[in-house]
Length: 276
Image 1: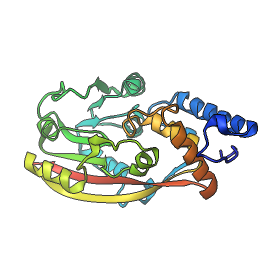
Image 2: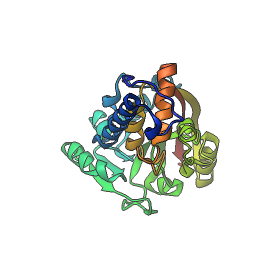
Image 3: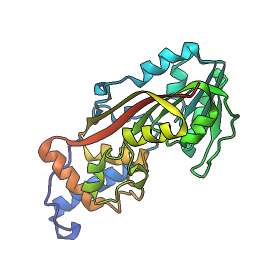
Image 4: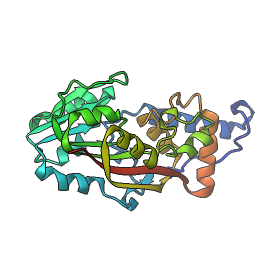
């Protein structure tokens, strides 16, 4: 949606000619509208054609790995189920399947979506160090992009159980933070495949598989960036259009000149087994 005219980004709104003031105001109104637009779960279909994630270029396939393990699983825990769309897509599920979710807007959606499959969704908070689930309950725990406490994963798995996770690494989208002049997300500091594997080994896991990759994500208009950052509030924790208006105008100008904004996504994958 590059339908806004370019203008000198070093100028203040009041110093712009009337027509450019109008374009500037229209752009900010558009970005505010994008920020206010409701989102459902982690559904980014609204950004189709405006944001391009090259997840198909990852050298592993999280979904295929999980599907291959399900037939031999009687107990499954999906950590950070989001709005439950991925877990629902795996049906038929093991007879004892549970999920956790910590983001309030997702919890009701996930419960409604997963109730027909007999899945209990447990709401959690960042302060929960112990989940209200019994020891050694699951033979498979899956986790895509969800923080976890390694000793809790160990406690919940049966002996010989598997932990499969795809994580967001410390260098994910850091170009966005730099371009906006925003602090880097502290939660991802020192978070890469070797660090995660080291923690798992210390907790008593054997690493069966590990991979790490950096892929490109492209944004084709600044409104897509605004919508995306609203949906993932941990990336820029104090993000609002008003606070970052100057930087957003600069990004709009940059995208108009170059056609898109490219940032680097950082992902890693681990399959680990609890001692038998």
